[in-house]
Length: 114
Image (cartoon, rainbow, N blue to C red):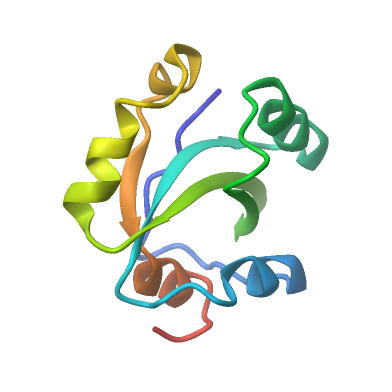
């Protein structure tokens, strides 16, 4: 497992699934970025293995020339709530060092607007 930190200078492109995954989330809210995988199948398997199906979404980031499938979790009104939620994650997920990200920053990185 590998965490994917935001990269301002990277060329990133949004895929249709990523756009749909972010619909309905308020731009000023936060999500937890849990982990990233190079293969979508591995990301989906991790979601099932860690029993995160109810509040997770997988977003595809393309950082030329590599493609990453990032598991985002939850929807929190503020950063403090998101950080507090990390303590309730399974130990194996916490080992990947999840962090809070503002929804607007993810949309901006994907070129979807804030």
